[in-house]
Length: 195
Image (cartoon, rainbow, N blue to C red):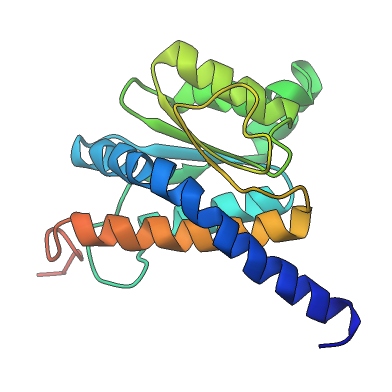
């Protein structure tokens, strides 16, 4: 393979191999946390910045609509309301935009999914602190250092390259969705039907 795309592809495949030990340690606790949240009628809140926000929105849609099989809708919400976000940024500072929404929406038993390739995004870290204070469980999707605020479970991708971390996050989101689909009962409240 020639060109940067070839070296990027090799780098990606090597990263996926290095991800296996992380999954052996942290994947099942992450799945258990999410399934327990949904089984006890709680919700998942998700946040991130830029590409990580896109991953959060993607994960939220896969949970609340469907991933691969028909199953009941799962309560998942990406923190995105523009009025709240801009009011928080203006009145409280951008570092508090997600924390304020966690304070408003989060309840004990809910889960916050915090996505940050660096693990150092201040507004994501503030959201983690707010979630812990309110009694939410916390799940991180991060890069090589992990979410430095310390999540209950952190799926830490062993890379410093943002693009590779984001690619691995997309894979992790799909693996989590597959595992959740396997554990959530099928055919229960799958669709509302008019009578």
